[in-house]
Image 1 (cartoon, rainbow, N blue to C red):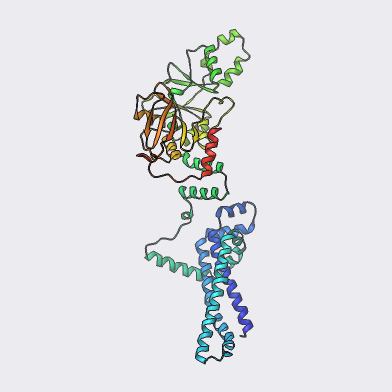
Image 2 (cartoon, one colour):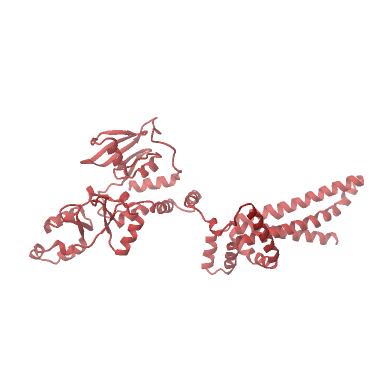
Length: 462
């Protein structure tokens, strides 16, 4: 074999090495979801690529076998060929034969190693990582042919490897182990937000969906004290005055008190009928004829289950009961949806104040119903209490507290702004200078990107 043939063969072996290295990194790096999308778009090469990444262990073995064979070929053919071509160069320097042989061997070995590592491995690896999708589609066909042709050898090698790892107590990697946990997905979302792949709203929505299954109805309910309800013993004018004042669409109907909710009235049905009635007919209207069923559930029901129940029964209002059978609160479909998309306001919510108002850095006005976990996330605190809300926490610390009084929680001053009897409606939370991180301010939670905090603060201020 002359030198030209040797150089051509070396170039082919390096190219094959590059192909198998690129294949190995590309099929590991490519996203399965993107391949599935290409299949739906009718890309035929994506179908074969899907087959390869589904049997990833088999095709990685094929790539490794290809790399090994080409590397051996380069070692057997490349070094002698380069040494043979370099001998005349060193012979012209007048070196002794022994030195000439050693230097030529070292130079040939270094040159073939450089070409193999740089051209055959490092460069293809970089390209495969950056262009994983395109390369996977391109190499899928040739890699499949190589796998079919070398299948007996691959089968024997894989079987031997499984036996060896089995003796060490290791099990083969299953496909589902490549999936991501919820915390890993949160980290991926944070990275996507940081790199501009998703916007703050999308980041917030997806994170709230993760938290959705962890919520129970009691955490998002309108508490019993704030429930606006009509009673069966009300006259129609009294009921209409209340409905026109508060402008709710659905009203619970009680039979005596809020522990006895018999159903609900939809103002649309009532008003559409009253519009065409005479005064005499209005005086004879029976509230009972407009009462519709209402969902009654325990207050600890997961909101995911409650939403499914509301969808199935087509009832948009649920009355929550405590463990003693009394009414503890009320939940609407809007309350549940707000857990994902944030506050939903209509033209009648002009006077409604947001649950969280940011006045300045670490200075907030909070609704008494804000949950403790929200306060921990907002302030970076580590408050652990048996109560659910910040208002309940303040009452637990000082049951006799009045509007205008304050208490200390960790490194924060909590000032009560508004109360209704014993019910704390609004309060102000402000960090004390030099005292942040008191007894209840412990390890910070996972950092939330600043863009999301600013986005949420903007939503609260609207």
